[in-house]
Length: 303
Image 1 (cartoon, helix red, strand yellow):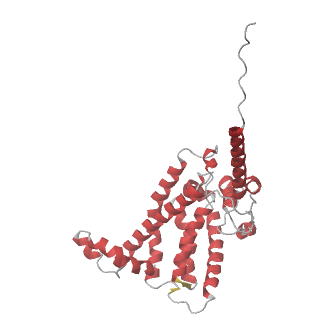
Image 2: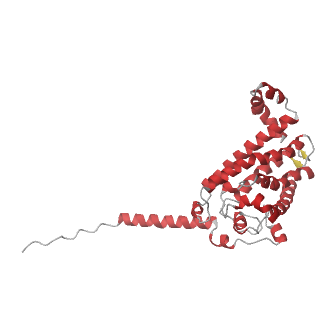
Image 3: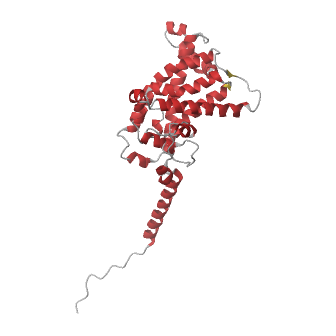
């Protein structure tokens, strides 16, 4: 995160802090203090995270989301507005309890580093990051379905039976924090290049949006897709995974999205819509070129 702060300090944050009333401006004038680190981290994560969520979810909604789902009987009244409101209300609190992880990273306690020395570090770190976080997110997510915590912690996210891209982070703030822990823990256990770590954080957010967008692209049974996660929201006790179905298979919680694979695949639905539009266009063109019948004689002349 020091890469982000080093970029934003001279371009944005210094000016913001200097414009504050004197006591606050003096307290935040020095860049390398714990107080300024905490304030800067909260601002960057809260506003940056909100922007990424709104832009990513909106792009998915307007370009890919099937609007027919808005008429589904399980789609709630004002659902999208409710999803956005819950997300933006929860995110500042999630960020507040996340700041210490990034703070200790800035203070040098993590295993993040600045310079790559060999080419194989990137693929090794990407694979390690995905395997480690996929495992931990599965067990944390499954734990949140335990009756002792489900009702007050995770149930707010399962209000959305029919998901939209805006469902991605529409959950209790502690739910979001709990499921983000594996990403932070990884950086304290394993070496990782700093730019890659930031990139993976952004991609994880976009992936979270993608598995809530209702766009069923792949029928692959290894990668955990939006179709698999759709089953999770409808049936609760299946498909807890994040990227793959590996841990669902190991934990006995895997369920194949039979109905989704059969009749709701994105490209199949797109093809059917195009075929229907083509037929309608041909029918309209045929109707426009058909000659009108001559009007019949209303009456005969008197003899």
